[in-house]
Length: 431
Image (tube, rainbow, N blue to C red):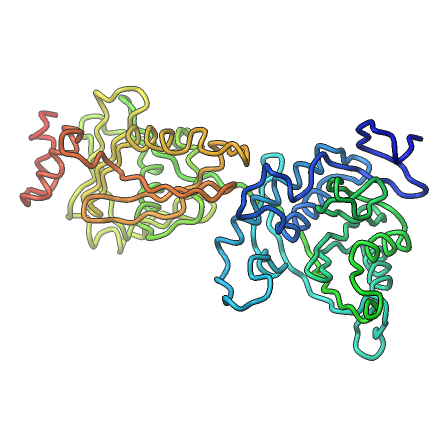
């Protein structure tokens, strides 16, 4: 076995009876932003719990340690932006508490996982009050975690690591600068340590100890965490081509646009196959009413009941143009909610706003989510957000200058403004 003084970069080592998997950086590395650098340990601890939920301890590699840091840093930024602003006099106000991560989600291997807090245990590092106050000392807590196979976030003196359990093993993930023995080292890296309860206790107390006189009375907080895999939903897609108008998909998408706020609507499935194709090729219109629609969380359409449908069947119509569009361009016109969506325009603006927008977090286009839709007259504003770096951009549904406005869109606006409605749209457009 290589000596600790060996200058070679050794990533995975077996030392006595415990195994250490070391990354290449720690949470204070310069590649992290000034906003998060050095204070993301709670979020990184949570990210490690998710990874350990998926991978066995013996499968973890140096690359996994680095990826935990990257995922945890993104989680820290999102959770910090979503939490209630702490009081200005709060100690360590920039740090996250484990409770701030409740229901936060993160992505690993193209799957989404949600963090769920089970319970919180308080105790002293050495002094044991497990019988009187149900406050076990740290070594009893570690033993209980091993026996119950319980993972969670451990915080002492504002420093946080994770206690990981998997397949009757126990380990610690530490995002701080640690040496080859898992203990504090100025030039160290983040690491994962799998060992016995006694050795983990020794490593943790060595890294946390600040005052020998009162260390026995130092308190810890342990937050038990469960990981829940989030089902992937297929959202309704909008598909308009020269042959058919997909009524069901239009209804699904239109219901989404009516919502004042939406929860992470993906655009990846925009060109899904349609389940219900309009059969009347001579009439390029279909009635669409707001109270007909009920977009379910699973992406399916609940058909309107007859009573609700008949109440408004004589009102204005949805006109879907099916011919003459360039490839990749979809236009929807809906008078019921004054909605005009030029998907080509939106798509181009999305790429312009988000392509290569951040290199620090390795953000990808799939990280862009639609989080809110608001309407301003005939204009709709789509708010998109990157779930890695939390960058937000607002994009209009159509060009905002008159000179750039599409002829079809301009005609529709004219119809609405002058009071014609859409029943003369086909006549005006020569369809």
